[in-house]
View 1 (cartoon, one colour):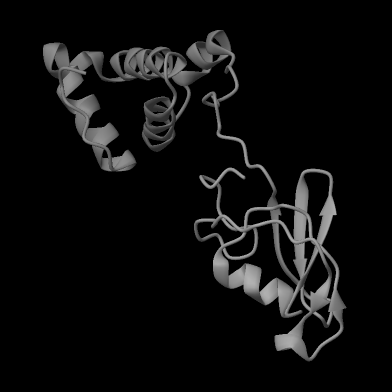
View 2 (cartoon, rainbow, N blue to C red):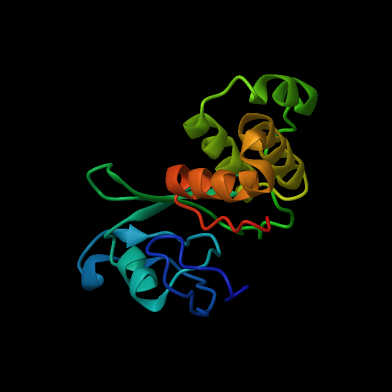
Length: 166
């Protein structure tokens, strides 16, 4: 049993438990006979609760449900959870359309687009470059100080620290 996965009922680290060969009585020896259960990751406390009849396991492929005697579902977890092996990226925006429309956006909207670009790798740099270009179109009349004004606006509306060098 892989002990690096959490208990499927409570999420605490699973503990090794031996195979059972015979049904036994649950509820502290007073209840009905409890049949064997599948090998799933359980902590010691939940393993004891399973055999005491405090919940039952229902497996559906790789998903396990822990169900209380009254039928309430206590937890639903993957029996063998898989690590995320790749990062999700935002969908590719239409950069040409964004560049064309960016100059039409108000400052707050441009700051939002800048903030969005901050969270996207790769494409986010291009998104921020488009916002910077739109800000230059708008504030270019400030002369060489346009970027200072743009950084102030982007910081104010997005809450991010935007340096004038960026």
